[in-house]
Length: 132
Image (cartoon, rainbow, N blue to C red; front, side):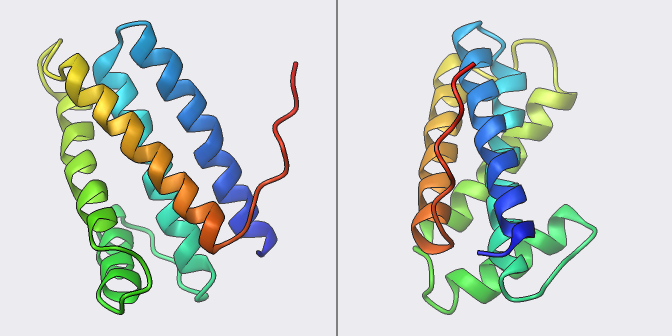
């Protein structure tokens, strides 16, 4: 694992912790947005391992699908998780208040956890979190 990949996975882990707090606090739209960023950072970490970097979210999502899903390196559902949660992020960030339901937010957070688990399995384990 490169230093950049580790940084991205650590950002994903932090966003997952925040997403869990937000969903428990009933901030469902913001929780879904943070869940998307977990997945996005993990996808970037995968691409970083191939020395690929993009400035647009759409390019990261497309390259992740092309380089990892279509080549059979990761299960297809992870690309779907990423695209569906991106749409939910737009709803949470730009939609009407309460546009994201609790069920949608909890599903997004669970999928984000699965995404981070996949990243740690295939890219490398993060050091244990420090307790404050």
